[in-house]
Length: 80
Image (cartoon, rainbow, N blue to C red; front, top):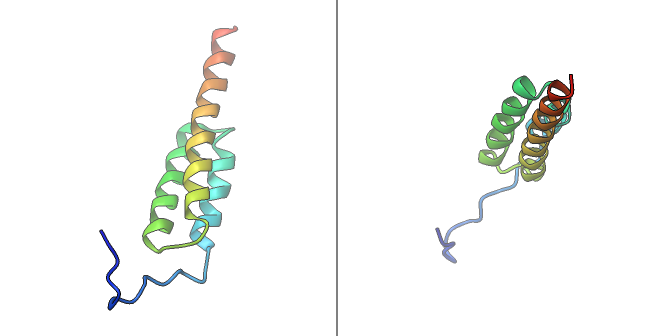
């Protein structure tokens, strides 16, 4: 999708509330990845559709938190 000169640019949302909640969920995904990982991803997508500035950070942290949390849980269960 290209931006035409006569179209106004999509405004950036002044609030980053959904992004921040997604970032917190992504961090909590390290402890409980099955619950907070998908929640952080969903919140990151919601923030991205609202064009929030921190949306990409929320998406990245939720994905990394979920993968690392699942890996740690798998390794902990395998060592028993």
